Amino acid sequence: MKNCTFCKIIRGELPSAKIWENDDFLAILDVNPNTKGMTLFLTKQHFDSYINSLPDGTYNKYFQALKKVTSMLEKGLAVKRVAVAIEGMAINHAHIKLYPLHGLKDKFEEVLAKDRVYFEKYEGFLSTQLGPTKNIGELRKLAEEIKSKTRD
Ligand SMILES: [Zn+2]
Image 1: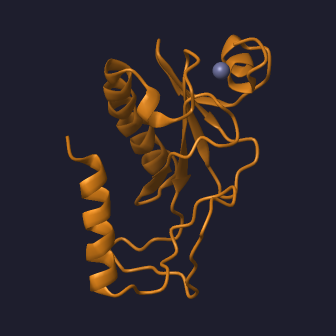
Image 2: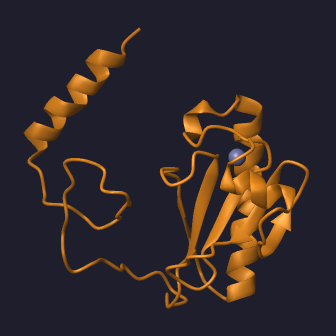
């Protein structure tokens, strides 16, 4: 797509720091990282950024390739894990954000934010912080509502 920032990067019209690519996908370091090695993993073909709109074949190949890129970041940055986020709300071109989780111990240890949050609407970012604890009755009611609206 002509004016898409990611398409321009893929065509080489904008500079990027590539870490991996194949015929279908490209991994580049984010130009606005909030942690060292934050990476954008793009489809080379322009697709809508909503992950569910990808054709099944592309979707499957994308996630197989994702494993390669996250493994590269683990080894290349000596991190134990890489978090994966798919929101696609800044640029409407399919992309996955990869966040190396720096500072984790060798052995798994629970790491939780001190504060809790809850969002009534999307604020332009995702958070993995926990929210307030809901009562199980409320959650079961919501589960039933979701299931009742999605039965065939
Ligand atoms: Zn594009």
